[in-house]
Every structure is written in C-alpha cells, then in structure tokens.
Amino acid sequence: MRPLVILRPEPGASASASQARAMGLEVRTIPLFEIVPLPWTAPDPKHFDAIVMTSANAVRHGGPALERLKDLPVRAVGVATAASARAVGFRVSSVGDGGARDMGLPSDQRLLHLAGREHVESGAAMTIPVYEARPIEAPPGLGAIDECVVAVHSPRAGRRLGELIDRRSRITIAAISAAAAEACGAGWKRVHAAPQPNDEALLALAARLCESPGP
Image (tube, rainbow, N blue to C red; front, side, top):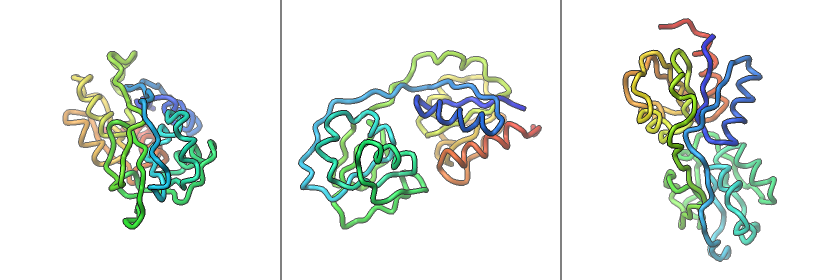
C-alpha cells in the first residue's frame, strides 16, 4: 500500500490524517502553508443579513472582532465550517456540500464574506480577509514522497506543490476538485479528482489510489 501525504495546513492536516488512519492508511502530514490571522475591523452588522464563511479558518482566526457579528446567521461552506461557527456561538442558517463555488447563496441578501486573503469570490456585498495562508519555505519531508499518493486540498496547494517538486513521475495526485488537479500541472504518475469537493470524497479517492497497483 502506498503512503498518503496530506499537504493542508494545521489543524486541517491532523483532522484529515486522523480520518485517513481510521481507514487503515499510512499517513504523512507535510503542510505547505501556515494559517495566520490578519488585522481587521468588523463592520456594523445592521448593514448585513448574513455572514458567508467558506473556511473554518474564518472562525479560528477571526479573533475578538467576531463578537460584534454574533447576531448574524452564518451560511457555511460545509459541515466542518458550520461546526466551528456553532462552537463559538453563531447560528448557522445553511450548510453547503459542493464547495465555495456552489453554495447557492441568495441574491436578495446583503452578505458579508469573512474570507482568506486568497479566496473564491462569493458575490457578497462585502468581503473582508481575516486570515491568510503563508507558504512554508521548505516543507520538511517533501523531498521524499516518491511512490506516495498526495492529497491536494486546493488549487493553491496544487500550484505550490508544482513549484516545489520537479521529479513527478513516481507521485500520484488525489485532488479535491478538477481545478485543484489542473493546478498541479503535468508530469505526475497519475492525477485524479474527487467526485465531490469535500474531504470525505477526497480521502475515499486517496484510499483507492493508495491500494491500487495501477501504473
């Protein structure tokens, strides 16, 4: 069985690794980015109908300014983001399951998107970056991932992986979406995209690839 390498930042890396190990996989975590908070000021909540959160990092790194917005409902990209929002006292009004590009956000609401510095545009009335993913200069262990399956959780991670790895022909990519797969570039042993853009579908794909004796 091939080892699985998880590139996402902490604490997501450990969460994915725990699920993968429960599936019987050998896992290595090699984060390519570190998530850090950005300074920001919460706007007047009366100008908005709801908050859009496309990552649990908005909750983890939003800081004290989130308190001013607690009366606004949250439209969360997925169950993990929804759980993080509820844990700090937000009410969640909707939970997506198709990724940030397919949340079905209402066009008649004034939405406030609390996002990362690099983010998918949501069509919100206002977007405020509250955190950023900073590249790690030389991720330890990345030079020894031949014959591994590498889980790529975002297009940005795919691009970063492509920048760092020249010898690709013995590495298999399991990407969370077609966009993430494309961002990795060419030359890999195999590249597959999960059928749904969520961690469960990605890990299921990765498990199949880890067990597969394919070329």
